[in-house]
Structures are given as C-alpha cells and as structure tokens.
Image (cartoon, rainbow, N blue to C red; front, side, top):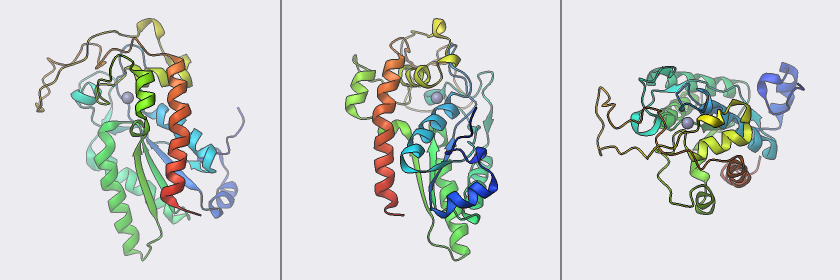
Length: 259
Ligand SMILES: [Zn+2]
C-alpha cells in the first residue's frame, strides 16, 4: 500500500514540517469501540469519520491525524447501551483529557486549524469541553490564533439525501444506530467488513422521554440495532458521501476563511 498524502501517520517528520508550513486544516476523527449489531464491526464509528475526513481532506489539502478509536460510553437511545459485549468505552474525563492533549500537541507543532470530526454521538459534549479547555490552555500561553471546529458528519445530511436514505420516513439520527445510514456508508467504504446476510430488520426501538440508570434494557432491541437496516445499500452510501463530503469541505473553507 502506498503512503497516503493525507494521513499524518504515513508522513515522515520532514514531510510533516513541510506540510504544516501551508497551514493545513487538520482532521482528528473521533469514534468508539461499540456494538453495531450483528452485521457491522465494533470500529464502525471510527472507520466512518476516518473515511469521510480523508475524503474531505483530499478536497481541502488537509491532513488526517491518527483517530481517537475509543469514545464515551454508549447510551441506550443512541448506541444500544454500554452493557453490550465488545463495547469498550472511556470515562468522560479520559476522553476530554485525551482530545485536549492531542489538540495541544498539534498546536505545539504549528497546526492552527483543527477539526474534531465526530463519528459517535455520545462524544459530542466532551469534544466541546476538550476544545474549550485546549483553547484556554492556548490563551494562557498568549496564543489566540487557533481555531477548532467540532462536527458530526450526519448533521450535514440534507433533506434531499434523507429522502434517498429513508423514502418511507426518517426515524431520527439517534435511532439510526447501525441502521440504514451507517450500514449504507459502510457498504460503500468498507463492504469487506459488512456481514450482509445478517442485516437486521427489526422495528424501531421506543424509549420513554427519560433515562434510567442502571440501564433499563427492556426497550433495547436484542440485536443492538435501534431501527431497521434492511433498506441499506452501497448505492445509498455513495449518495451520502457524494453530498456530504463537498458540503463539509465548503463549510470548512467558509468557517476557517482564507489561509
Ligand atoms: Zn455508529
């Protein structure tokens, strides 16, 4: 396999110095090790943001940092829950500290434009906290030229793409766990990891409007999939990428402004 010009992990330190001189946008994919039903791998939430961030980086001349492959604890309403075997999660303070540390390291070596590219819904507020603390660290060093953008790629999916994915009605992004969208994009980017014969077709989970701790496993489907994935296809995955990748690239160009 050839070295990729977008992956920091593939660069030498000499390459890194050269690339950072151009003030690239640096993407940090953040995922999880979390059950994704009988048909998708545990690393789904890491593989998807990695693939999408790489595609966006190719468009904007950016770099992709080695991903954070673990995430915050899976919740029943958005990930099936932390009790599923194989779901290996971090405590919030560990995730916040890890991302804050990585951001500070990137900045120490000259990076000024950073995207926290989330693939796991449960991470989101801890990424906000990590960004806030890292910016405070930098302010204390007298540095005010660092900009961080935090995004969940699913937020970019337009109504038109939603209609392609869910012609019979959209459940919700929470209930989309291991369902049509994630399965479709995996079928497009990593078909080798999808157990197509095992794609489940259960009814959507119904949760009460409150959370119970310890988890009430009653409303959680046995498969860990929160709504049917039967309508997934590689073609739908391709539609998602074709729309979301250029839209994220355009949004980042706008948000970061000229180099
Ligand atoms: Zn997922």
